Amino acid sequence: MKFNILKNKYYLLIIPILILISFFSYNSTILAETSLCPADMDPDSIECLNYLRDQLGDINESNSNIENQLQDEAYKQLSLEGKIKYIDEQIEQTSKLISSTELEIAVYNVEIKIMESNIEEVEDDIALSKQEINQIEKSVNLRLTESYKYTFIGPLEIFLNSSNLENILRRTKYLLVTKEQDIEQLTMLSEKEAELLSKEESLTLQSAALQQVRQKLEAEQDEILVQKIELDKQKSEKSYLLSESIKKEKSLLATWDANRIKQGLLDEAVMMYIAEHGDQMANYGWVNTGDWIGNMGGLANGCSTGPHLHFSIDYMNSGYYHGYGQIDPWGGYLTKGPDYYWQSASGWKYYFVRSDSFRVPLSGRVILTQDHHILPRKSIDIYSLNGYGSPVYAAMSGNLSKGTDRCGDTYAVIENSSTGLRTAYFHLQ
Image 1 (tube, one colour):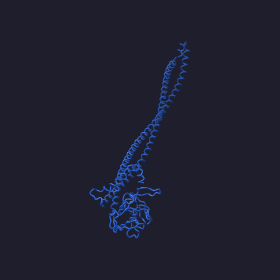
Image 2: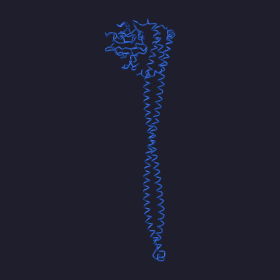
Image 3: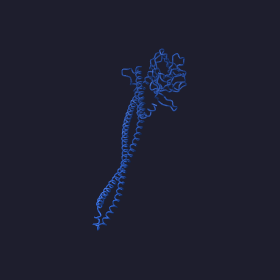
Image 4: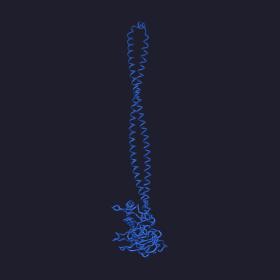
């Protein structure tokens, strides 16, 4: 997984790497004359080789840490991108909800205006009805005064004013008729006024209800706006973290690439040292952890399918052939993965192999090409990305002995009587 993540990013580094390859080619002759060891150290000494190996180990460890950090940043970016996408969806939904609420508020505003207009019309009708009632009441009052005046006309006055009798009777009759009409019209206007007042009250209640709904919607809109502001803030924070993670990733990749340049120079120096001082390799006797005991071979023959190191851990008194190994290397001796260099079409993962209580017995970046062999064999096959001829180192201290297998390949065995353990290294040059 880690390699797959990094591989896509390293495509961007193809051009610089090509330049570096040409740089190495150009400087390969210079390396023989220019030592990468400190000036006070003999470039032909084993101390110089150990120094180069330590430098390589530090760079490999640094790049391993960088790969872990890159993996963390990749997961962080994936998580942040997912969160930003989710927040964007929430912002989109919130914006739609705000627009919908604004539309509802606009509709209620129109309805309230219509209601207010209807209330004004009713109020005008009520005012007009009151004016009509006032006018009729004035007329009625006048007529009542007239009627009251004619009520007190006695027979003598009628007889004395017999010439106006007809006029008096006509007026009296008129007053009686208009009185009935006024009463009828007043009743009608009063009923109309009551009806208008009831209608006004109903419209006022409806308007108040609409205003309450509008106020509620406005309050909800305010809450939604606050939510949107908070979402925008969260998105801004996540976007900032994402940009910082991308910056950190670029910085890590730059450091990783710079380490690869150093690693290439050191690998070349180590290989040139081995080519010139192969006679200094330990062949027999006591060796310490990390001592150089051979070079990775494994050319295709009846015992090997290609360059690799067959490595096993066993008990000294197990009675098994050296190459078997009953002890699981992953049981606290070496570490496998979880990152890997490549995954084949069949699904096999070439996990990176790193030190635990034992040191990795190969130089450079080491991958697993075959896990436990047929049980009870728990030996493994590993390969250095530095390629054929990579130095092989003692995974533990002990007495070293060497032999030749049936295919003519050299193998080494280290036994430590204090721990009772035996390590075996097959397919050496």
